[in-house]
Length: 229
Image: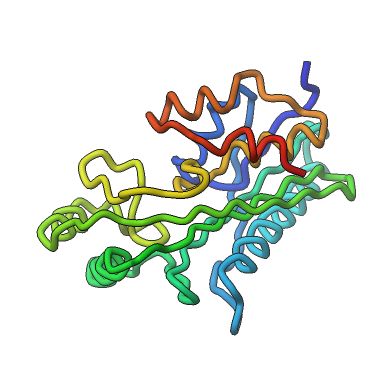
């Protein structure tokens, strides 16, 4: 039996949805971390830095709460940050409908873009911190300008890096990808599982099967991810 409980440092409904597939109990917290890239910072560096900063902020917050109330000391903090990069250009969350439209047009022109997720797991009161990176190469389909307009009008792109959700059944933006599907959603589950195992925590479900069933996507890379160092 696992003796630890997870603390997800994110209020993203997509990350909560995916984390539930592990079958482990978890709570949610929201670290206050600015997400703007630093000068000349690469996308992968930004994803790593922000995941580590969010884990640290959540750990500090838990330490503060520990001084005022009884808190489960066996929590493992899980923080994640997902960054979309088109070449050397980082695409964050669009500020408005106009910017969302611009992003979707640029992504359609391709030929591909890259999605990075940095994940960091830490144990409050311990020096043990694990960080991993997931990388997925994504090619968009040739959606029309009318489809972009309808999708942007739905409001779905406005809270998402790169202005799209891969799982959106109406828009279906992606033609093909190389790498982890769940990474593009915002939480690469097999990377999370591998890190948890290194901390002695084992999901209660078969994660690759649960993820593929939930997302209706056949994953050819899960064994490679889970077995890598």
